[in-house]
Amino acid sequence: MAEAKKKYPKFTSCRLTFKFPKLSEIDYGTKEYPKPDGEYSTRGVVSADDPSVKAMLAKLAPLHAEAVAAAEQEAKAMKVEQRKALEKKNGKGLIQVNDLFTTLYDQETEEPTGEIEFKFAMKAGGIVKKGPKTGQKWSRKPDLYDAKGQLLKKAPAIWGGTIGKVSFEVSPYFIPGTGAAGLKLGLLGVQIIDLVSGGQRTAASHGFGEEDGYSHEGSFDDETPEGGEEDSSGDEGSSTLDDTDDVDF
Image 1 (cartoon, one colour):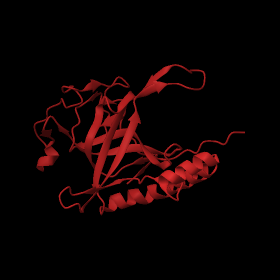
Image 2: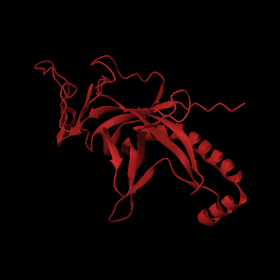
Image 3: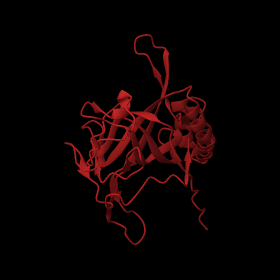
Image 4: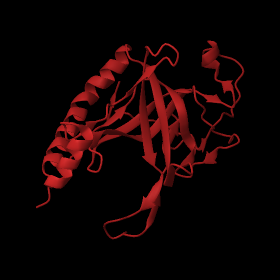
């Protein structure tokens, strides 16, 4: 009997500064590095000393270690020729461990900036390979929410510098050809707390809070900025951000 695939919990990140976000439109890569099925992704930059970041890493570290251990066992079970090739490539170890994050450095001093960077990604589409729907095409996109947790019917153009949170799931990986192993952070959804779009920031970025008085009923979920797209997954206001099953930092 086949061993049941382990189910990993969903997580909700701490606040991140988005870097190179590809959340409003599908990213098909470049000529040199194409992504035929398309991808949604964003990098998230945070201070390594932030308590919420340390809490997030404390939850993910055991799962990362578990993924590395599983990769080591898989590598040891490979044919001798494959293992010898990996040992020659990676030195004494069979695998090349990829960290959960990238440490950022000052490009002039080459000293650590104190910030680290995570990457979250979601495959935008593909072909069903197993089951009754084998051969059928599928597609998906990340759920986008505003700061109040309301689902955005129409996606705004999300630029780098936007502040938000990311809902994600984790999955271990091992690439036999290179020995690379680690933990993927799979993008599920995004909550936009401070939007940067077209060079314009939100009121919060200027220190403005919510006050009684004039209110413009329309917001960026009522109008599609240039480059945005409509999300037909649900009716406006029919969904709110629900983290009840997630691990929130």
